[in-house]
Picture 1 (cartoon, rainbow, N blue to C red):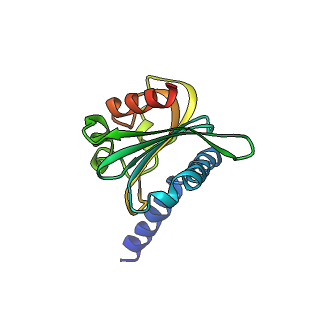
Picture 2 (picture 1 turned 90 degrees about the vertical axis):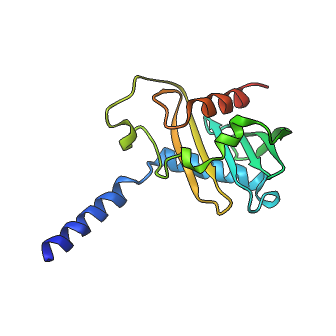
Length: 171
């Protein structure tokens, strides 16, 4: 019985330490939370949202307002000042965004290059660093990742990721 209890403790300790984010990943999460809180938190209580950023500088936030989506593009400068670049309403009939807000397509664990998702390696990774997260109405994180813009395989649904990335980089 003692051996079983000890083994359970070791597995719990290894699991909790194995899921920690590194310093850069924590910084990306913190900056993303900062951008969201500055431009949308007060207007979107209890609404799920997606956030994709590039280089901890350029942000795309899409809020599911139940009747439509609100898309916000913003920039974060080196002093952590947030500048809204654009604000747009998107019809709820957008099938890719409908899929993007389906929690079931995401992993619940954080995905970085050191995570189990890439334990067998990856085919290709290049470009600026991205940060992605989908938060539900209770602010639980889904699909959270910090990777390269171009990554194969991707932990995020390819159609969803391509669409969001296109929105982020197009003016």
